[in-house]
Length: 467
Figure 1 (cartoon, rainbow, N blue to C red):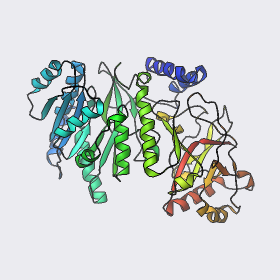
Figure 2 (spheres, one colour):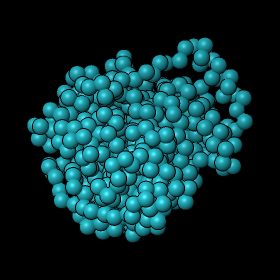
Figure 3 (cartoon, rainbow, N blue to C red):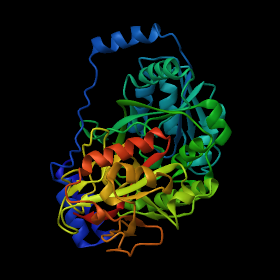
Figure 4 (cartoon, helix red, strand yellow):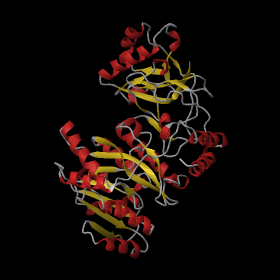
């Protein structure tokens, strides 16, 4: 991330959360623990020719509709957006523009200049908001899959090719086509001269999705599913987040394409650079999550975190009553409650701590260290265990499972410096373990036992203990 972008972001952060938090944000933005560059390299002419030949030989060639709601778009950015679609190496596509601009002549002229029958221009009588404008484009789509694209952003030349390749590989692996696909992304400066802030995303994690719409760009969905659930006007600003949450409720299968296929334009009108001016979008995100919780009968309050666009599901009462699918919930272990570093918590199957060494107050790569998320393994020193596994705990540790209130609660809500533990936020009393206990081995063995039973593990980073 360049210094100017970091400073602008941190000033907005400071205005919302105070000077100390703003200084911490600047420190993390400039640190080596938060690399935010992009390694994207445009393909050469030779590589593009190879991609086109590959596209022609695919065993499956679905029609992909790229739908774009446009409104008073900068003509240069709009043309570049359209060019990035029509120049795709996978050519079986249609580009549908739903134009709600006050003066439609400029964008219509750009569309007419392409003389490409795959481009459909739809003038809308009035601007009904992002959701209804997108639905208008959706109604004209004839594709098997629908790709969502903002009116000033760009697709990489191989974006749709990689999507179709993933559809094919997913089908071979599972016997069915994916319902939703998403890719990695980065940002592009308004000048188009530089790529920055690569967002390398994890494979699909429904728990992480409840904290942040990390899927975002590029999103491609089966047309039948999108037509069924459609966009809802009351969630304008977070309409894509609401769409994904409802797709999850429909039992959709999600597939991740781990390549940059989307360039998010950094411009004054874009959410990518103007988070402070888009706070209504994050409030809409809270409402979408509340609706999701109600639909599943989850007893939880939803809060905005300090970094806009990130949320906390604060479960009320016994978390296992709302989430019987979980076998354990675990927080993080730190060297010092205020100025220390993370030494334990969420781990991979080999026992590597995912955020080890991250200073307290830092939020990590794309703020994921502060997000609830599915885990392969959790540290038993900061863990709450489903009663179904208490006997297994005793067999593994030699100690009966007992709980106490979490001693080092922190809060990630805006403007809060702390909060007391709530009912149901008790964790295992690690003081009952013998000093010579092999914490790592016990944690991995118990986590494996829980996973093999079909239950999940949830990382709950607002639980914190000092060891």
